[in-house]
Image (cartoon, rainbow, N blue to C red; front, side, top):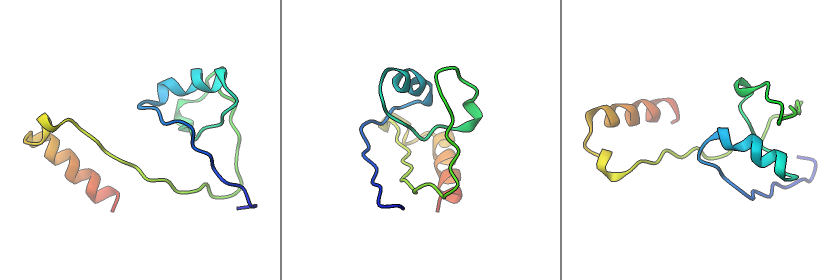
Length: 81
């Protein structure tokens, strides 16, 4: 990867916060292209594959016994094995 390293400085719970953070700082971010165009975001098209990162699903324990919640978790497990 050309000897470059990532320096992860922040994680946000929603991509809706990312444009304001990027506009106020000198950071870059992995941002879904489906949310473009956005006047605060300038896309950078990469030729190389981007590094992989872990995707985490989290929820409040009060949802542990919800049938709908358990079904969604199973669907995610099937998709991201």
